[in-house]
Image (cartoon, rainbow, N blue to C red; front, side, top):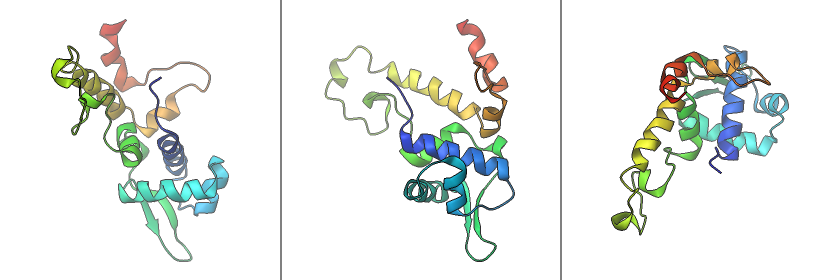
Length: 152
């Protein structure tokens, strides 16, 4: 099964809530309470998000954490890469891939194209788009409808 890792999933959840509270700053404890993510995990994820400059950290009595840009300007690709590194579906689609079958594999040259399509979808989906998704119904965000049209 192809899936986003747990820490990246938590990172997107945290960014989503920071986007909803923007421009307010939230303490780490408040983020843990709102998201239901354990505080030690929030601390770990926040380091990735601050290092990637997706979140701004300010110390002091009026300090806390806030989203660095409006939610519409933060893509899911950025959020995932901040925590997990560059997206690579297979070894042969990663920049430093070391697959021992590469020279004999008929698909080695094809995976980078598939990887690029998935990356494009994640780059075109913003935190703001997540708010437009129905909670219990499938929804394709507006920037992806054109991309999906030929598939149907």
